[in-house]
Length: 246
Image 1 (cartoon, helix red, strand yellow):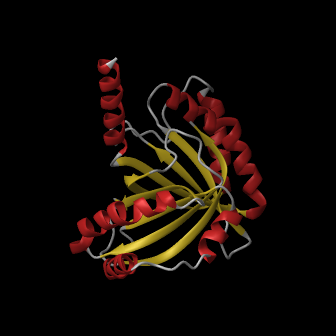
Image 2: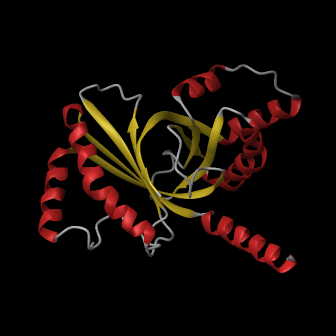
């Protein structure tokens, strides 16, 4: 019995270590709003199934498709694809050969998808820690906060997020998940270096969380004061889940 418990403990620890620094590819795609449903249909019929095949084969951990909700340009719709990868060496964004569809059919589908896209951007990140839905199905809403951090303060910033703020987030009944990611795509020093993801069951929960004014302790005030010296939040994105594969 003790041996079984020990093996379970070691498996849990190894899984946690494997997930830390896990590569997470963020792929933004923008289409005309009139073409949004066409894109979703292609993803459902083809690419989500390819990602599922790779997940079942152990080549991928998970894949999500999210819709950006606070975009000001109503003529266009932006989607965010999240690729949870086991490693950089085995990274697969759905372009590798598959047995599900013929090459001629896939070539036709990729051409259709390409004709819809008016903008595209890929951001490489690493999962630094949190209690985000990795193996499980994600919830309905995620709020992303992009952070600009001085290069000299990377370590201190990560430690403060993970050691000071994550425990408080876990106690928040409105939060269904939280994650810290470093942005690994080469970028200028004055561009974003990290992002924080807050997961909510609904938009209402997100609004409630934003509207709550609580009395902070002296220690909590000190923590917020210290982290404001380390980072600057440059933008916030609100996204709703379209589909996910695990």
